[in-house]
Image (cartoon, rainbow, N blue to C red; front, side, top):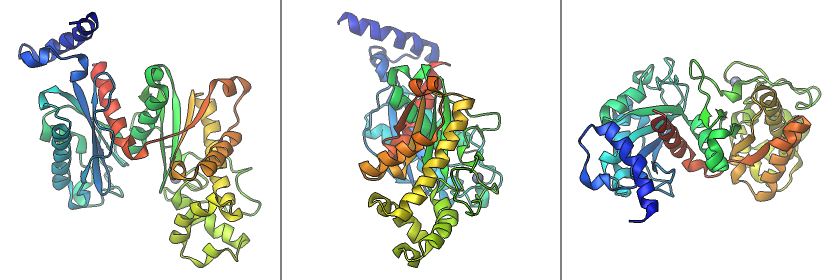
Length: 370
Ligand SMILES: [Zn+2]
């Protein structure tokens, strides 16, 4: 055995004794710290995605591992599917159950900080049996291990933060805006998601922004499904394009080929036009980038983060287009000179795996500081 092995063994054995109180398995006691793990489970509308993260911060899975989530069948089926995802990923990575310290679970919201689905239900949890359902406790009871919960956008934000900062993650802060059907994201302080008293911190999509410099003269104030007017999501989301931006911009470009399409089709096709520098598409995406810049300007004066992160469909766009979008966001974010030299702007990568990976990071952090 080398010195390096001896050094690595020590913290693991110390932690292990504290947890199992004498039931130490001999085979396990010679493992390195890397041999205890947490599991991350990302619960989506159609699929669960699972990953395993070891105590040294290494992912044991480098691709999507999915099973059907069956959320539309109600909580009972969905919890079974999550348990199956959990056991499948252990089998796939040859990880014994005894090495798992905790599970991180993320789902779309709205839900409480402790994983209780909104009493009014949610897009993915519309069946009445989901209303007010405690998905975190139910999974914990089913698999017999501690389960930590966070919402999917916060999980993606946390993963992006750790991926960007690596070993410095726990000393850094960031804000992430992820453009999808809505506008999700999260606020990370010293490597941890800010969840808030009611679990509603980091609902960046519903932050109302100053609209001067974003809207054209005479353009109606966009409305969000949440009931707010002029919040970030009313502009910087697929829903915002469909409901607010395209209806206005088609009045300015009545002969545009997309004007003949139904709005949902036109909204989805718009990015491909943006990649070809189509003036209407650039006007729409330019407004989105400016809206995100206004949000980041608020963040600059609120938490003054080390990094401003941007994710969503735009990351999958052609390199030229996504760089233009990121540059427009950056130019629309008003930072002071000191902030400009301290802050980073970056795109969030690996979004497919970000939920499961972020949930695993949250579980690992919780175990390490317990
Ligand atoms: Zn809103």
